[in-house]
Length: 82
Image (cartoon, rainbow, N blue to C red; front, side, top):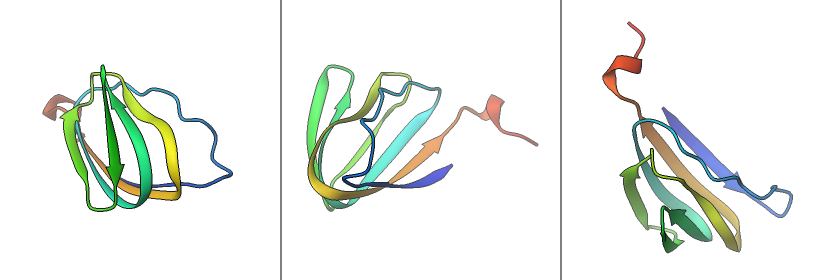
């Protein structure tokens, strides 16, 4: 499942997410401190992360707005609809 995420001055603080599957994030613009478990990554345009989505994750600090990134989630095969 692909998502295009855009964060602006009107965006609310993001909660921490946790769900099945794997997730890939590719930064398009802006800067964000992105948490995955105990690690925080300073991300900017061109940076990417691939991680286990079952570990708590999400934007921790919005450093340079607007922020735009592509998030692609791959769920386990048992969740796919036929």
